[in-house]
Image 1: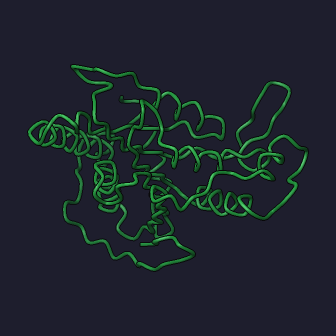
Image 2: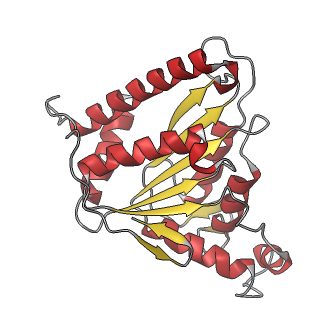
Length: 249
């Protein structure tokens, strides 16, 4: 954990300033009522405490608004050049530009059937794009994006990584592998598990995860000497506007 905290602290330090961008992706069909959305918004809140002038781009995809890739896009993935810039190729270009501009990515996602929901898979299919975010060489795929922190907030009805685990986890290893293709290796996972086990369990797992978040961001905010802490309640003078279907804060 020490290496990961130090590495992420370095990336966040390089990202500080009025131009810092946070990309927040919400994947649940339950919208803001979802535990994954609640958790990812908490993460964004912690980030804004340390970077109050940051811009937050909220990309909501759990509502079915993001179409799966079309035929021309699929053909382009197996061709020497793109056969079309229209249809989902245009959507892909927009999503890739958002990702490229982001200094930090926050993803709120449920676990569906042990893995990623279809909305998140559709977004991944749009941004993992040959000649745009990776190339193919003699030794396989070559990433084209710079690394940046990716903080993933996961909710699940069962347990997949804690005491009392009852189900397999194909989500976290998949995300690690697929993001590595495009150059994103600095992934951190936070989870609310066992949400289907009743309100008492849900409250307990929320409290446990909130404490884990506080500990994580305290380590990030502390300097090499171990001193320093988060600025609780720091103002967040961020602008909000709606740009091409994106909620930008």
